[in-house]
Image (cartoon, rainbow, N blue to C red; front, side, top):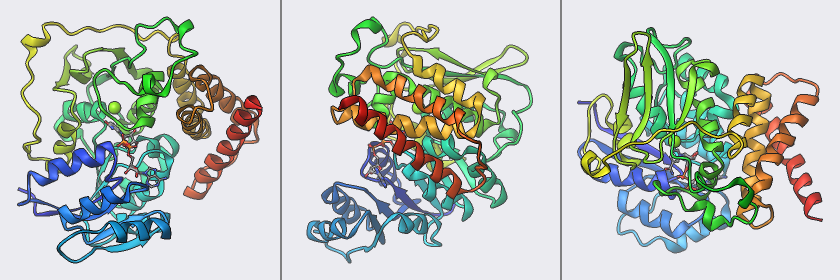
Length: 402
Ligand code: NAD
Ligand code: MG
């Protein structure tokens, strides 16, 4: 059994954050919380810090720090409070933790995820946007600093579990021997069966009503548009060193088969389970042991049947755009991710129609392809293009609304 792990849980108030705390609380003998972070909901953060005995919390600004102090009701010592994005990266690299759970949503999670890799931590990665925007930089940091990378996005966790044991290196540079392709499953989201011509009036509540998974609002919209699956294809490309043409997406509405690995001999290995993120999270926290996660048994007889179908790119144009971006290169992936984050935030705020999300992303890809190419070697370069894309997209959306 591994030694006691001290965990920095970044994004603790989110959906992944709460599922992670649920698993941690089941294993006080081997898992403890060192640090927690949140961007909003300071009352929730104070409650979590009191319950776990965290030594440190990271909050976005001084006003949030004040709210945290006011909300603190813990019986023990109040945790140290650090403020700002730099403090997040420092918490991820702090010698006080062994394991970092990267559960911040969006490219905002990139600097702290990268800091964890550079500090050689065990990283449980939920923050897929970090890999989309900076896959090559992040994977090199994992390799060069002896970090241990365990994917907890359910599809990638499934693939990780189905790969040959010897080849589950933390940052492979070529596809695992014997593997023909990866088959990534997708639920198809709430609009799988809808006529695309009826989607213009979709509301945020409808888009966030996922049939199988309960998740944060941004990833819920991404699941409805299937941007999420596209981001996951890019994520799989980096995690498993797999070329785009050896990654297939299959719609599987029940979300019971979490993904598959096909071998050259025709064998296909799949990981199945209830759609509950505590399974992949427990896998990452326990690796290589298996921990109780609180997830119940899979009743295949109750399911009776499992269905599979090809994704319809007319219904889900964003999925095609993600493959385009992966083939075009890193600049395109950064622009795609940034444009999507801005478009989804605008949609959730009532300032952009659901059916405009795909055209906004397409426009950002065109804009990026037409600008002089720049080197994207370092974090600053990535964040620079990310910020530039966001500014343009905000302007396009504003102009269209005016
Ligand atoms: P969420 O919105 O529920 O939670 C996000 C967390 O990040 C919150 O704690 C929030 O306070 C924090 N945060 C938000 N913006 C921030 C910023 N600018 N700076 C610092 N912190 C910030 O999101 P979620 O559903 O838990 O998803 C988190 C990540 O995990 C995403 O990258 C998502 O794609 C990935 N993921 C989620 C699920 C799921 O089931 N929810 C599954 C697979 C992967
Ligand atoms: Mg997923």
